[in-house]
Image 1 (cartoon, helix red, strand yellow):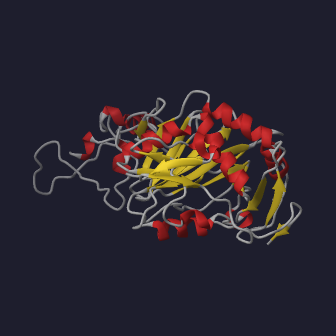
Image 2 (cartoon, rainbow, N blue to C red):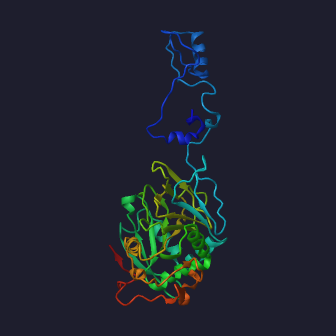
Image 3 (cartoon, one colour):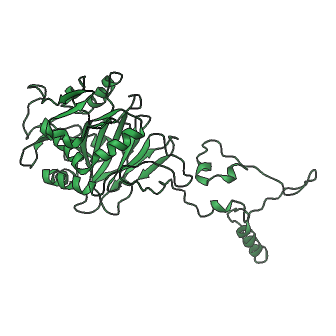
Length: 392
């Protein structure tokens, strides 16, 4: 009886627990034959058969009586959907199931970004030539790079910045996602400062306060671009940092009318929530799970690609700096390993105030009572190569 009060999706999710009970509508006598009501459609078909030519056999699907199921089960979608999302700038919203209003998982959230954030990030990305680079990489029948190949290129900005392109497990995972990330210090600071100029400080403040953190540092940010995906692998990017790290994903360029692009794994690992990216909204996953994957999709337009930015942010401190450093070191081509040396050279948000991504390229900042300056990498820390290099 309790199950009849629940949403059918919740009942379907009772893996291995579904049962059938047969209940008598009146008292039965010993030896009395038991009849089952096959529903009105079966009864009507039988009466038509019984009153006509009965030379042929009778077959008809078995149904159930009217009002057998609760009314709220009738004509109900069997798809798991996200509760409508309206995240205002600086507001953190837990992702919830549409059918029952419960959290999808403890790790899945959205945060509102300032109006126009996505447009500003696209303008910055277009200006670097990265959008055009993605069209070169993605609008091909075969992957542009072999699995795990990468190459360096210089952007088209007035102050040349060096970036690397990485083709990640494209054949193994059956999708054409490519990553583009900073390779020199100027490019690293440029991307983070652009995020700050667009208003990402609002998200850092909201996430830091929501998670009860003291400070946050964005220790890795990269572009992710794709136009098709047949399959991908469930994974988590941040983990085991005592609840002090987040993986933030926001759009730069979306395809109008596309299907959901991100699959978030629910608390029950058997259930997946497909979600669509939205302008001026970021999804963030904490290190308490945070499992996800790219949704199957294929854009058919001649010029249709999706470009995102993913950023790992953490409260880096004595208790977890080695783990956070390991998360970054797992990335292929990690040129900025020195950023984890303590005391921290950069803090991008603090509960005490006084920190901002917008100040990143202005030199110094204040943290813990000391003025701090981010140092350029020492010679030899970043491998030397040319923009024409392709590396396996």
